[in-house]
Length: 430
Image (cartoon, rainbow, N blue to C red):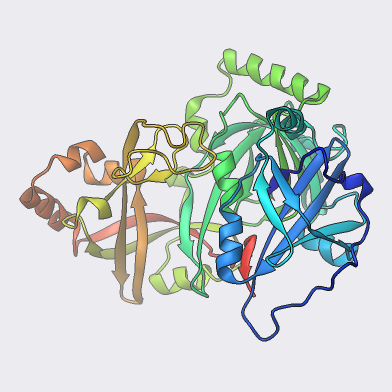
C-alpha cells in the first residue's frame, strides 16, 4: 500500500531517529490485529508503517485512506527495523527504521493543504528503485526456472485486465484473485497475478494499452501447468503507475505505435482466462478434481462427464445476474446507484452498470459432487443460449423450463480449476 506523509512541521523521513520517550505495551492476553502500509515524502526516502490494536481500531484505520492518498501521521513511534524479518514480508526500504502507529499515542489524518498535496502526489510517478533496474519480459522468459522464487523489478504495459475470482479459504476468510496481462518490446503477453484487495482495486482502474507499470519486487515463479513463468504481486510489491522516466516514455511510445497498427487484437485480452477447448484432453472424475485442487499448480483444466444437480435459474435474479461498474468492472449494488470501488475514477458518481451472469452450479458423477462451480460471463450466455439482458426478461415459468433443460442431464463439461491459497492480507487477525 502506498500513501504519502506531509507537512511544514513534520519530520522528513530522512531525519528520523528512534523514539524512546515512551514504551510500547502490547495488548497482553487479548486478540489484536495488524495493518501495514508504506509512505514516501521525497524521491529517495520511503518507510514502512505498521499498526496494531483491537479489531475496531485497525479496521477503522484501514478504511481511512487508499493508495495514492496524502496523509499526515501524528506522533508515531520510530523503531529500529529488523531487516532480515521485515524485508521478507514488507517492501524493502532505504531507512534503518519503521514507524509504529498505536491507538494510544498516534493518529493519521488526511492532508488538507493543496500545495503540499500537489507536491507530494508528483512522487506517485517516481519509482522507488532505479528506473534502469528491471528485467524485460523477454529476459524473464529466457532465464526460465533459474528465476523461480526470485523478487525482481518489471517495466511493462498493461495489455488486458481479467475478472476478479472470489473464494473462501480453508480457515473461512474471503479472498479474491485477479490476473492481468503485460507486454513490452520483447514479449506480447505475460501474466501478473494479484491477490490483495488494494492492488486488485488499483489495477481495475487502469486503461489497457495506455498504462505503463514499474513493478518493484514482483515474485517470479514457474507455473507447471502453463509450463511458463508468471509474476505475482505480494506484500513486498510496490507498483508505480505511468512512471516519469525515460525508459517508461519509450515503452509508452512503443505501445502506442503497435496499438495503432492493430498488432494487439482485442480477442487476446482473454488469454489470461481461456485456453482452446480442443487442447483440453484430460478426462477427470469429481474425486480426481478434488485431489488435483490440492496440488501446487495455480490452475488446471479438464473434461468431466457428469450430471448438473443444482442450477438455480429459478432463484431471485440477484443470485443469477450480477451488476458491474462499466468503468472498472467492480461488482456493485444497483440499489446504491454508484460504484463503491474507492479507486475507481467515477467512484461515487452516477454511472452505467453492466449485467453479467454469475451463478453457482453443482455437478455430480459416480465419485462425488463438486459444489459451487462458477458459471459466468459469456460462457454462461453460450450455454444458456441467451444474454443476461434477455434472461432478465423471461417469465418465471420460462426460467423454470430453461433450468430443466439442463438439470439432471448428463453433460460433457470443460472446466478450469483454480487452487485456493491461504492469503495473508495487510489486515490480519493475530
